[in-house]
Each structure stands twice: as structure tokens, then as C-alpha cells.
Image (cartoon, helix red, strand yellow):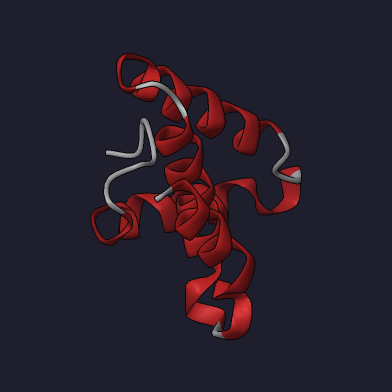
Length: 81
């Protein structure tokens, strides 16, 4: 499953509406690669890592997108409600 998620993260950019999918698939890949008891902490850590690298000029846009589409992205994004 981690390999599938990583592969999907690499190829979802072929459709503009899928840009959020790369972030979601990367989070899923980290979760799936972690031992089961550590998956939630892996999800939180990957969210923090990604958000820490968002350029300030698009930060709010990206976070709004996460809030709007978290449900279709397996609810992997944190603090979006």
C-alpha cells in the first residue's frame, strides 16, 4: 500500500484538480510505511512537514483546499475543520 500511495503521489499532477492528491497520497504513504501503532503520529508529522514548506503566498489557498476536499482525501489532513 505504501508503494501504491507513493506512486500515486508522483503521477496525480496530470490533472490540475488533483494537485491536492499528491499531498494526500504522500501522507498515506507515510502512514502505511509506519508500524500500525505509529500511523497517527506519522500522519501528523507528515502534515506538519508539508505545511512547514508551503510558500507563504499560497499557504491560505492550500489550507482552504485541504478544508474543502479533506473528505475525498481520506481525511488525512489535520486541523482543517
